Image (cartoon, rainbow, N blue to C red):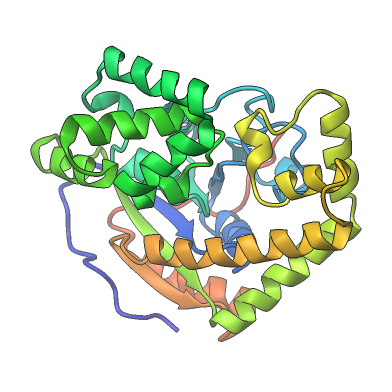
Amino acid sequence: MLSKTNGADARGDERMPLLAVVGPTAVGKTAVSLLLAERLGAEIISVDSRQVYRYLDIGADKISPDIRRRIIHHMIDVADPDQVFSAADFVSGCEDAVERIRARGRIPLFAGGTPFYFHALFGGALSEELPKSMELRKELEEIASAQGAGALHCMLRSADPESAERLHENDVRRVVRALEICRLTGGTVGEAWRKRRKMGPSPKYDVLYIGLKRERRFLFESIERRVREQFASGFVEEVEWLLAKGFDERFPSMQGFGYKDILEYLRGKCSREEAAEQDIRQTKAFSRRQMTWFGKFSPILWYDTMDCSMTELADAIEKDVRHHSGRWSFVDGAQEGD
């Protein structure tokens, strides 16, 4: 069940040891993280770019309030849908949560499927630290205004395909920033950060990743089943309510899979079934990209979630994590939330 570890070597004691459960959508991260939180005495920090928004519940697949009262969760419902929530906001919120969790003698357990957020927190990938040019930024903003957001996004796709894949074309602010970095450094955003990390200070966190995977055909079945269940359980009505409150495709929160597709359905541009199918296709494609990104994370222990039950899987993970007990202190049992 446990595959070969990528670079799990000893590191300096000055860095804070943390745990993180990663993997593609619908692989079982939530179930595993809940079991581990109970066994290790942990509080969970959500690493999900949609769960940070209030009112995005069904489509973001948020954990139920009842479970959140039993096991404390952080970084859920911290912004309104019309707010721009940046990676810097995420890092700030997480750092605060980590300090409060540790002050209570608990274990911070990160869990989620947004690789960019993980990289921002543990790899220092905050674009505010890279070179800036207000003149160039203004020039790019004028291009977006005159030619449309799509034209600007095409420019980014030519200069930095990886960033273009990550950023929605309507997220003009971040597309502009990515192009600004490309122009000023002569490379991609990823290259700029890799170069900076070689020169900059070491990250302050020592994170051990628990990677979850599943054979692709089984993962795709899980994705399709989840989307169908969401559409049958009020997802369309959730988006309808958000739209009635003024939260529409102008905001990054509403540009995620499913939400933008249901907006198309509600505007009469496609059928309900077409919206569901588009959500499924996009989520499957995203899961492939997630595995590519998470495959580069280190140190990481990989587990196949089809090998056994979730309880047996948690047993194996707990055993392996406790093997590293020199780096972590454990508290048995879960803590009641409020």
